[in-house]
Picture 1 (cartoon, rainbow over the protein chains, first blue to last red):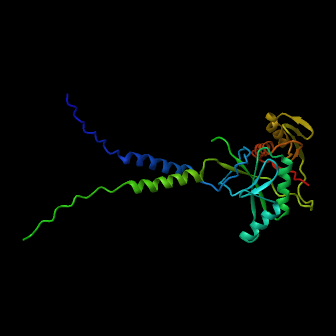
Picture 2 (cartoon, chains in turn red, purple; picture 1 turned 90 degrees about the vertical axis):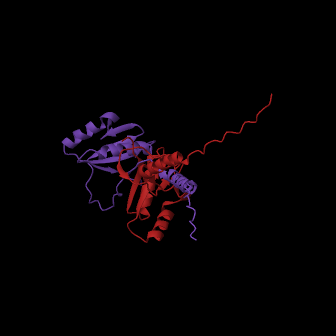
Picture 3 (tube, chains in turn brown, blue; picture 1 turned 60 degrees about the vertical axis):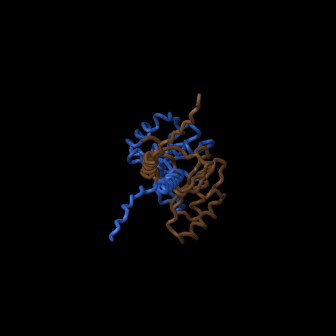
Length: 132
Length: 128
């Protein structure tokens, strides 16, 4: 018996078009549904409460142990305000304070008082809104 | 003699660079976008020493999960009702005092619930 070498079957070129379609759809989904956000502190879980909506803030983070962090480096209320003042040159300083949900309320209020003392005009607590 | 040029078949455009770019865009938007919705709660400026502000007429003390409204213990579920009863007696200034082991979550939740009541002015006692 003679073995006849079979010609290897040529696979048809997979169409990339369907791939592109799906990737396009995902791209549009993320463009429409997501909001660009400045990096968040992974250590901080925000408190949940219904409140006025706020775009993703460039916040000052207060961790559960009571330390303040801005851009992942420890700061104090005074040094943070001094840096902010140097950046945008003075008044109208509004501070978004993102506090961990397990932070003691006393420490939170101390931070708020320290920020006002250091020259902030308005201090706002950042929360995570639930539902809807 | 005229020579007819051979008719050039147009090759289909290669899709690979397009896919590359779209993939990059997709990655960028996936990694840099967030689906969390944020809210803001204003704690209000600390009272100045002038003493010209209106004196709050009611006091809510939060101590962990225990709530005391004007010294009387209040159930968390009936907080709105008790506050509404105060409003009906024209008491519309409420001061919140956080004591002991109260966490930020508890404080923030109470503030956001009370701010929803129309006509009530909620202030938070600051730290010394």
